[in-house]
Every structure is written in C-alpha cells, then in structure tokens.
Amino acid sequence: MRQFVPSTQFRVDLENGHKIIAYLCGKMRRYYMRVLLGDRVTVEMSPYDLVKCRITYRHKM
Image (cartoon, rainbow, N blue to C red; front, side, top):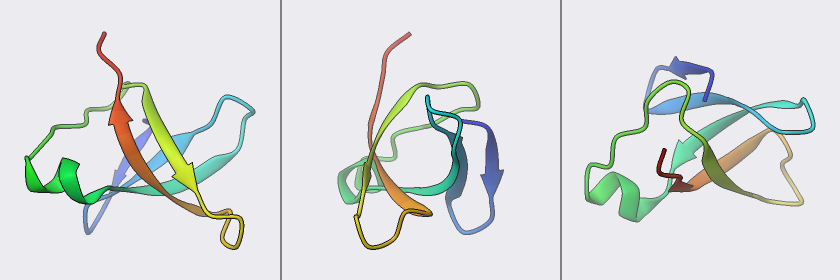
C-alpha cells in the first residue's frame, strides 16, 4: 500500500515494481476492513485491464 486515492481506491506497489490502482473487494467493503498505508495485501488482476485490480486480502503483521 503506497497512497490513498479518492473514492476508496489505493495506489499499490507490486513486488515486481509495477504501480497499480486497487479497490476493495465486496466483503472487505461490507465488513469495514481497514487497509492502512504500509499494509501487505493480496490483489486479483484481470488479464484485460492490467492497471486496475481488486484487493482481496490484508495480511496480518
């Protein structure tokens, strides 16, 4: 997690160095799970749009 963007989106740095925009998946949004700067997250990407992805899991620290 690198930066917050308006409308509940986030800028995320991937392990390979790419920078993408991510949004929370439905269950994370439904249960008000907090994602903070510096958190490690798991994302799902579509093969059709490699710039946007969905945050599916926040790893415990």
